Length: 417
Ligand code: SF4
Ligand code: SF4
Image (cartoon, rainbow, N blue to C red; front, side):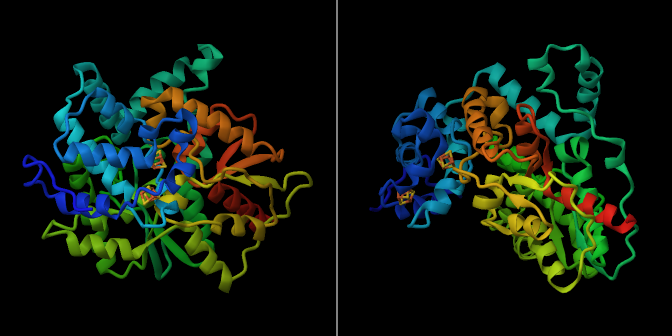
């Protein structure tokens, strides 16, 4: 079915993408079975198919209201619908287009705009975030438990140790990031230590920062594009000097960087570079698996009773990057017994800023996710994304950790044994 857009849309650069995506949907509804918001709210307009209809109608000129915006806001951008769709509908791209258009047509109230702007600023500025968190950490102990749980703990001193010296000929690049750099610097440290053991240096790239996902998914694509260009500029001299990959310990950042090529495709100065960045991107699980194929990794023995883990696959890893089962294989190879996980495809509710903007839906998803994660009585939950880890940890009775930290600790202990 040919989609004819409203004349106000015709000049938009998003029209060809929106038309292609909308026309590729055959309305079969298979995606609804994996959509967390449809599952919870049981409303067609809170399903992928319903949202595609809403976006199509809006772009065709139909009137929109705050209720239309609410349905789009409630989407987690988890992209479970995308990996399930038999017609290859690129829903993630379409929801971004829909959100940008609805922001234009139905401006938010002053307070909502202020809240979103504050979130974008605070989360993307490590200095501002650190300043705010320092205050929160000072009063954390005095707060009532429900509030205290919502403030992430400060990183351990050991997590801020210096990375192994970069002496190897093989080099891969990191991203300094925003939230993770402040709250969980240990993840990159763990990645640097593991790679060092395999003879690969993880380069801490000065000038790189937030991946741009916060701006992109909060309807600020121009700001996101500036961030993407800045990261490309920071990585580029290293790529020209022979760095072989870009390896990001946060799957959310990885998923965003994988989209740079598409998001910058119309930028004459950056399109080719963004394409190259996408080709160089590797999930840590892919790289570690490859390196481990050809070298041994001396790990410490697992203490009795500490071998039962469950892995929570972040949406950004399984649906965004389409990497499934790799981390689980590595953990099994390291001697862990992984407990089975029901509804592994469902989002935990964290979803970038979603848990802050849609706390009720996010909270229900987290509760459901934790009940599945804990069903096999694991000693800890492993995951691959800072957002999921911090959000699940708020309510989890067992530690929630990055799989890289778990592996790196065993590696360090193995080296000392
Ligand atoms: S997005 Fe895909 S799965 Fe969902 S209704 Fe359209 S064609 Fe079917
Ligand atoms: S991205 Fe996730 S929440 Fe949004 S429509 Fe698709 S499955 Fe549902």
